[in-house]
Amino acid sequence: MIISIVSGKGGTGKTTVAVNLALSLKNIQILDCDVEEPNAHLFLKPRIKEEVKASIPVPEVDEAKCNYCGKCREVCAYHAIAVLSGNNGKKGSVLIFPHLCHGCGACSLLCHEGAIKEVNKEIGVVEIGEKDHLQFVDGRLNVGEAMSPPLIRQVKRYINPTRTVIIDAPPGTSCPVITAVKGSDFCVLVTEPTPFGLNDLILAVEVLRKLKIPFGVIINRCDIGDGKVESYCKQEDIPILMKIPFSREIAVSYSEGVPIVKKDGSYQDKFINLYLNICGIKNEADSSY
Amino acid sequence: MRVKITATVAVVIKEEGISMKICITSEDKTLDSKVDPRFGRCQNFIFFDTDTGKFEAQENTNAQFQGGAGIQSGQLVVSKGVKAVLTGNVGPNAHQVLSAAGVSVFTGVSGTVKEAIDGYKKGQYKAADTPTVGSKFGMPGK
Ligand code: SF4
Ligand code: SF4
Image (cartoon, rainbow over all chains, first blue to last red; front, top):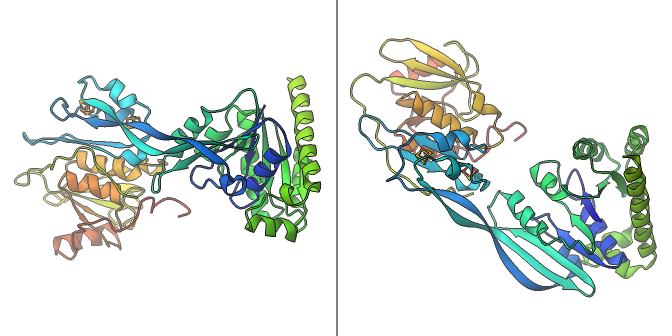
């Protein structure tokens, strides 16, 4: 089973949930897909055994073959190409903006002149490691690089189907999140009981419903805000999987980079319960299809 | 973010003769409209012929793009064969396309389109050699 931990915004405790859940269970693989700011390793301190460079193919134009027909520009769904045709016998030019390129290959495929070849551009690195019985993989996007979905896909290639997989997804509701959670059996939405939390939660719920992935909500720092998140969940028939009250103990252990289950064993039971909860809802969802 | 070009060839648009078209980014489609301060995500382009005084307005459909609005707006303006662009600000990608095509970019332009054209004719504006804003400047919510 693949379980993704998602949150509509950063700083809600998504990584805390992912890490503590991973440590509370057996036969786990954890994937940190928050490639712009991977931080699960700070808490797990895995031994990295292998680093694999991740790259995407970006186009390079051989201007000797190019006739500036503009086809490549038209097919690029990411608007990463400009073709200046030149005039009055002056030479044209093809401008490619690699930081907008998703490496989809459409332009080179559709260039009739065979003027485009693909060159690999490094976007980041995938790190594979372990901590005791726990298998660990994360992706680290190069600084200044904007193209996280291809790297997330490369991290997900290491999914081990013989294990329960926990994915720490990037925050938000855009393309990188969707890339991370696609193919998951269940999503855990971590939120806070504040107006901002609710707003982002609603957006995330819309996305998960479109993707048809069963999900439930964890309300973190459940005692600091108002009851609107809870009543929203009730109204929308969304299961609340767990409520974590604000505690000094969690805050301190977080700042020390120590997962709370390592400090206070009673939390382990709570995360095991969370897992059982997830399995129950997942089974129900399966049988209703 | 550093912008890297894989293939650059300087393009010089022939300057003598017919083409005296300029482009103004505009909120609406008339000469009395206000200048739109964004280039890539402006609402309309007004193409004005300084010789005949005729103009043509075109909605900027590139403004909706998630990414690449500046590049494709630059492409559109270049394909119209304009000599100069008058706008508020221009981002790095659009600037690169426009300058590769030899289009001069005049930034810091405000007021109505008509005033902008008059200012241009009087030589009031300075051409921007570099982008005046960062990437995604014109995105809503930024
Ligand atoms: S499709 Fe090929 S020939 Fe046409 S402009 Fe692009 S690179 Fe040049
Ligand atoms: S590979 Fe795809 S995204 Fe990249 S420039 Fe070509 S068409 Fe655009």
